Image 1 (cartoon, rainbow, N blue to C red):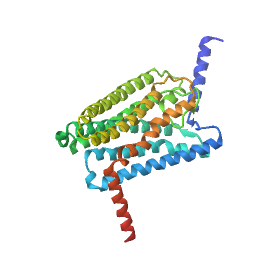
Image 2 (image 1 turned 30 degrees about the vertical axis):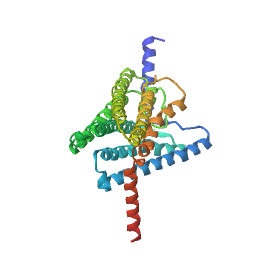
Image 3 (image 1 turned 135 degrees about the vertical axis):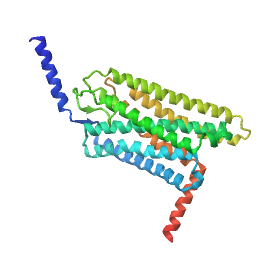
Image 4 (image 1 turned 30 degrees about the horizontal axis):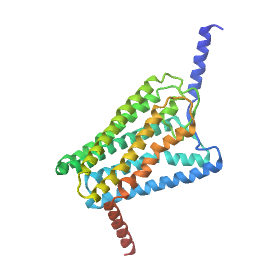
Length: 326
């Protein structure tokens, strides 16, 4: 057959395949029904625990005027972000696991990718600001009211949201300009960019380059900034004369670093791994580590271990009970 005719035939078949991809199929967590049932019970429990913990933080930091400080302002913002972040993926994954209905439209997939990237980007920026807040509070306490002013808090929040929107729009637009003709099965429990790149028959070099630049730029710089802030905090804390104060500061900072490290390392691993066929369970584990675990642990590590938050939560709960009885 003439090479030109053969090439035209392949192009036509490719166009037909592209036109047929109107929806994607998400992957199950497991093939065994019993294991799917177990996971469908664990995921809702983690989801509900995440909602409860973050809602408590939002309620307490809003009602109690003693917690109207920059630190708790960003804790409240982080909790709102965590609720949105985990709500994008887990409810849909639970329904898919129980009903075995794995389909998601192209528009739904694009929306999921946009929201996941937006929330992840905003969360990273909030964690950076919170690390800066702790650094100023411990290392420059006299300048704290000036540096962490209300104006700074509002502006930094708006900048974080704008950066998240820009980042998400750039990635989503760059992904869905591609043609998907190899398959419509996304080997993940939610739509993410690395899984879609494996399905594309287009040139994905620019997508891989964008992922590399963003992960190395934002993820790497964020990790360095946060670790540097906590190293300075540790050096200052070691100079405290009271041993209990040093222990309290270390017990607060170390869990923060662990959660940030899990979030950034797992997310970077997912986005920087070569788009080749790999063990699906490994991909899902890394995705769970950056999409589900941080929102689940943040309320416990950042707030619910805090004495002020616990006391304020107790006052709010007792106040509600008193009003209910009266």
